[in-house]
Length: 326
Image (cartoon, rainbow, N blue to C red):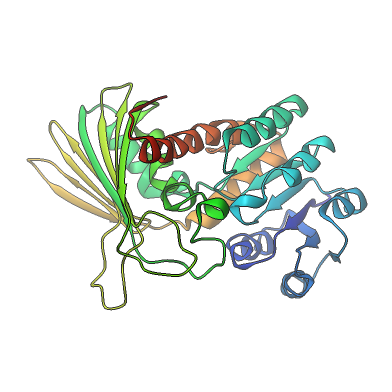
């Protein structure tokens, strides 16, 4: 059986969330590497030991090696042209979040992929965790009332992170994982109100809000309050990021990608993550490509657009002071 041919656009640090697993899977071969910094493409090609480095454009790579799928690991403001080039050629794609910084771009990509019947995946890897699967099963027949969650930390050391123009802000760029996971667990949101502040982080060229609080009302009736913050400095004792789910007869404490605790009047049970979320999402996507079955992917592009819309609505609420209907 011939191997699935994979190409990679964007050979920075995030690509290493995928390449070791693709290297380990026996059904795949990475045949092309493209990055605006060719030395990074050369580095990843050397790591994989297969494929060719392309220097002109992603279009050159796609036309030459004709991959079965393209992995896209580029900064948030670089989405659009790459995905549309893949869709035009009928090439499936996996794209890292955030999938775009505006809904017009995301919807154009969504519609182009749908028109060609492409198998797509967005990197919301929390959906693939064993402890998230257990959480969904635990709350399936319970009444969830309130949810509180947080992603609070410092500022990552990548050039595009500290401005809205290049990252979309921390909610869109980073905490979108919690907003997506909330959709996955509690269904579609109805409205959101988000408030935020500045003045804590003092750094040249930085224009993001330092922290925010988003109150989401879901169509199911669940109310979630999700905190986002990037103000933490060296010496901070650390914050347990994750989601706390308050049911009428139980409590759930999901610690981000680490463990989950289920507590009832009869027992308290804690489960550590066993599966690698990065391996699991790559395995699911490769299996979808091998079988032609999009349903194996828990985070297809069309669904991921709804999580982007929720986070962009948070930004709109911050800047307008209004409750945003979804």
